[in-house]
Image 1 (cartoon, one colour):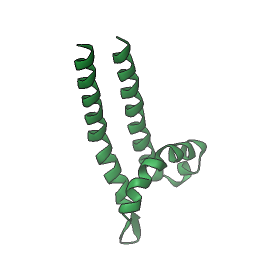
Image 2 (cartoon, rainbow, N blue to C red; image 1 turned 60 degrees about the vertical axis):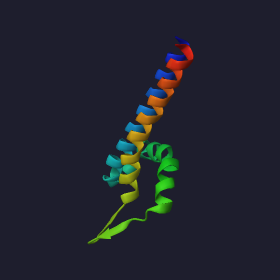
Image 3 (cartoon, rainbow, N blue to C red; image 1 turned 90 degrees about the vertical axis):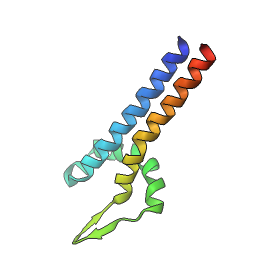
Image 4 (cartoon, rainbow, N blue to C red; image 1 turned 45 degrees about the vertical axis):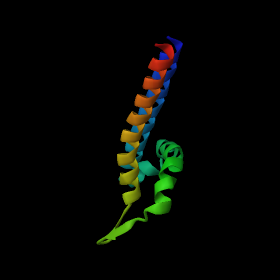
Length: 98
């Protein structure tokens, strides 16, 4: 039982981080919220993951607006990877425990 409790905790942490990414995206569209304490906390939490994509994918200019495509790609990649990781961990746990 303890292994499944641990897996549920990991699953919850990964899900919450996904919500952090989505909240960061929403807050980034509202300049007044980006500078708040909540905006800064979300930015600090999401920055390490987003940095991976921003190194490879540069923002593109669309008219007078810069679009951060890396952010979009990072969010699209995150959820299937999260699901895959949890699927693998649960499969391993079921084989080990039986």
